[in-house]
Length: 221
Image (cartoon, rainbow, N blue to C red; front, side, top):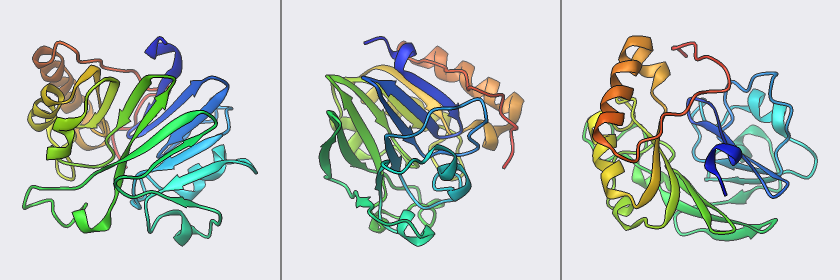
């Protein structure tokens, strides 16, 4: 299964996967009108506005969307029939495997942003053996070293709230993945900073894949 045919970067940490007639949206944020697809499966990693945004969720939601979310996210926005995922969660929906992986900060100056006690998550999406890991908002954590057999790892590198580019490179070298895709950085680093980070990421990782967003970033929140 060719990655560039099924995986699309909307921007920031928002991706959607289109495979086997199933649309999977992860952390919808600033979803542009160009995207007409609706979510068969919605995955939310954590409660922050740039990952769990009701205005954007409504753009891709339909009556029978399967909603999977870490705790303290969708239920607080008034949604019902939510499937709560915490680290260790494993389920299959529409023949798509979903596994929840821990996502948290370890650096002392970031601990307040994504505390481990919140049980926020990243996800591994398994589409007939093609496995895509969306790390959520996280630092380089021990659990990443155990991840093997991935087709793509989507990891943040914006710094401040998550890994910076050097930490993301370290994580990318530890994760067993055919491709490592940086995300969650352009709004934080700006245009020039993003280009510098992309070059360093690509020069440092032989399996780096710099994706292009569906729409150009605004480089700000």
